Image 1 (spheres, one colour):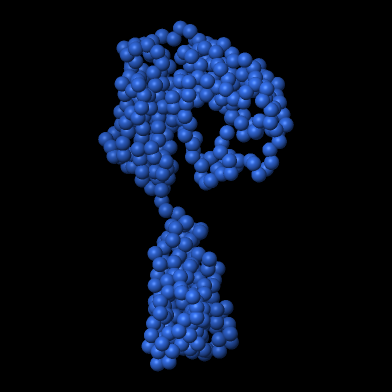
Image 2 (tube, rainbow, N blue to C red):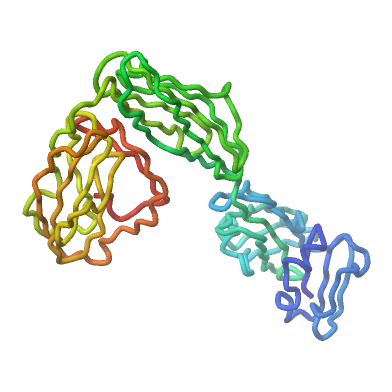
Length: 413
């Protein structure tokens, strides 16, 4: 005789293949809190028409509860453990030789039990726990099978659960930086709008917005709704910024935005020029890769120093043969990531420009790439967020924030 226990009969026909689990049982006893065959029972689960006994109670060995549904559990996390109690209702002691998990999703359910075998005295009890750790979304199920020396071995109970992805907010802002250009001293620029968008599936709460750093923050001003403010999924919130220079020269500031998404805080980078621009930017000084370098990694990023004066952007000329027209226009930061191939020689130069015109070009540098194995490659698809640099772009150094979805085998160059 084989026994199957479940507190809810629905677990039988949604989670358990009775015919497979009990295919060698001459007599099947199902304790489903039903004194007779429930309407949901399917005869295909009982090939050969084995005798089936239905009922509320049981004698001998049992497990309480007679099944468990762990409900919704976030993928990548572990549920609270569920305690199961083995009851020996007979007067004679029994030996439990094993408790194992089987079924399609057995690897997502974990049994925590002392080393076997166990001896349970007559009318005695013993406990073990089971936890649920889904690795993917959807309905999951498995069977706990306990082999013992009493009648009705193995004793089987069903466990189920649902793996879910929890709702999360996702912060995006456009643009991440802005150059107000030249504004006469004592005047105020046209307003610039920065739009925060919640691309997640839970409310994004903007908790605070303030100037984070910058010697010139008093020359910038912003306007936003009263905070905190919750942005619904796919909704937006605007921050309006003005530039009002009180002295001549390049001015920088940075706004920090605190929120409840995982990448908080985020930053908006501001720059502008107080007074009239009447000269072009200075010449650009190249940094890396150095002129004549060999064996350069194909992940190499071209970098240069910030040019003197008011800069609206940089024109990058790059290729195996230096082109007459710019390969790229860089308006944020002082770097450019080209597509490089192994065993090639490249040339490059950079020119800063503003509304007056182009500055003096940097010298032309050359470098040669080496050979890189596939194992050394970085999957750039893992990069999930690249933030603007600060300061932007009129200082001798700058910082760039980035984030990746998981650990990678080498850092970005």
